[in-house]
Amino acid sequence: MPPKTHLAALEDEVRAVLARAAGTAAPELTYTLYRQYEDTGQRLGYEHPYFERRGRLVAAGAAGLFGERRDGVVGEDVLRVLADELWRVCDEFTWALPAHAYNARDDDMRRCVDLFAAETAHTVAELIARFGPRLPGDVVMRCREELLDRVFIPYADDQRPMRWEAFTNNWLAVVAGAVGMAALAFFPDDAKRLAMILKRARKSMARYIEHFPEDGGCSEGMDYWVYGFGYFTYFAEAWRERGGPDLLLDKKVREIAAFPARVAFGDGTFPSFSDGSETAVIPAGLMSRLVERLGVPVPYLASVPTFASDLCHRWPHLARTIEWTTERVIGRRGEPAVAFLPELAWLVDRGGPAEFAAKGGHNEEEHNHLDVGQFILRAGGETLLADLGAGEYNAAYFGPERYQDVHTASEGHSVPVIDGQGQRPGREYAAKVERFAETGQGAILTLDLTGAYDVPGLTAVGRRFTWQRHGSLVVVDRFQTEREMPLEELYLSRIRPVVEGDRVVWEGARARCVLTWQAPVVMAPELDVVETIGHRGELESVFRVRLRCSVKAGATRLESVFTVERKEL
Image 1 (tube, rainbow, N blue to C red):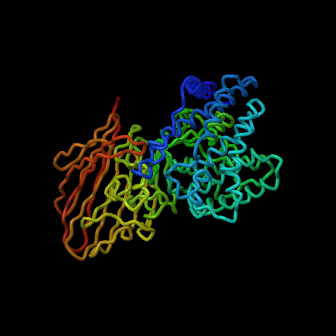
Image 2 (cartoon, rainbow, N blue to C red):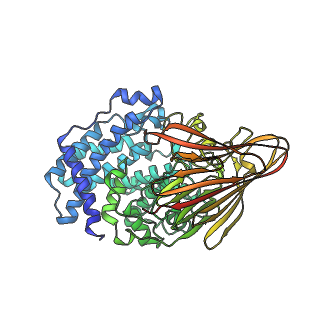
Image 3 (cartoon, rainbow, N blue to C red):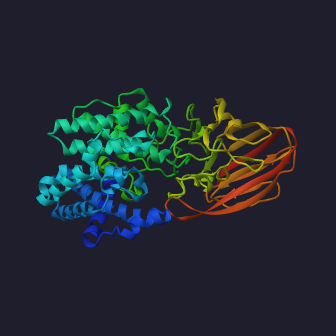
């Protein structure tokens, strides 16, 4: 058991949510909200109340788990809320999100098996399996009918492929894992039907693991590692415990499980490449089980994640945290270290006075951004040069206009703009790793970025990072051109910089970064302020420094020197 304070704080949160659910009405999912995505492309109006409803349901389930763990008693107050919330979920027109209607067969949204219909099915199936004898019979019967009609019957029809089964990302693991776990809970005595569902789920799981590189890197970013690989692990353990195969006993699976510890910064935040976020939350139960089963290293986890930290309120993250968390994973800090994943082409140096991450890769990665050659600088737990991570998910973000969003666009990353053009989307627009070396106090990474651009007259682009963890980064970009053309070096931050003649200063609360440069031509710094909307719909300001110059035909070398230092507080 972890120290009492870790799970006790989580239980207090759960009890508070349970009390609110007992005393307030759940938000409605109106037709107007349901139509919002189709009418405007906006998702959050529907999704906020949808996930609040899931939060009420899983809080009731979690309160039941805490009661069982303490004295084997599930209180009547818990069972009342649980019955009401299960009944309420059964009332919903669809368990899928409107944004995922493209997955519906024959436009039947009731039986649309998307990420969240699958998650809901798992939540409902496991709750009635666990607490059913103490719940009203008509609630349990209705839940069983809804599970069969909405999810199990469509999923068992393996003659009709589901669209997401052709994906190569987290969808495979989440949908198959959630439906598979739901079936394990729902069909304890129906071996034939259970076998049909598990066979289909295992095929998706194999495809999911197959598309990871051998170094175990997740190009989707840390949030999607938690999501996809989390559901893979939860399903694998549920099946193993029922006498099935041990899906974790695979060399590549162990490499994937080690990914968070390899790329985490010293304070437990992460590089926010692709649609990731710095503050990705690893469920303590998930990490505990991976350490126990596979012996993987642990990224720094300050405490058990809060109930509110998962805005989608996924049942297995919460339930397995309550059931699986061990003291071994909490509060463990590693030594300063460099990690390099050669196939993913991520470099992370963490745990020192300053921290650094950079990436190569290509421009058709999962949840792709036009970001080949991107980098991040941090010190004192503060990000000075940033990767913006995910923007607001809406119709445009996943459509033809994707790369017009600053979060995904080439001009939303600290990479060169050449002759007014950024990088291009597509797998062929890629970096080549020419050299990686640890230096004892940092690292050197050299990338050929020529393949990431399609500019007439541009014959070569190279970028070399020379990093020292005491706080020095030298970025050397080399260009070979057949004609005169303008060049720009872009540097992005959420901290407003001050341009002081021949230098730029980012002054944070706990650290500062100073940029100077050397070039054979005059480089003029300019500051753009970009107002945008963040992943959760919040307004945010982004500050982009442009170092502009014009070069003649031939070879040009531009050198940017960043000096990072923590402040004495």
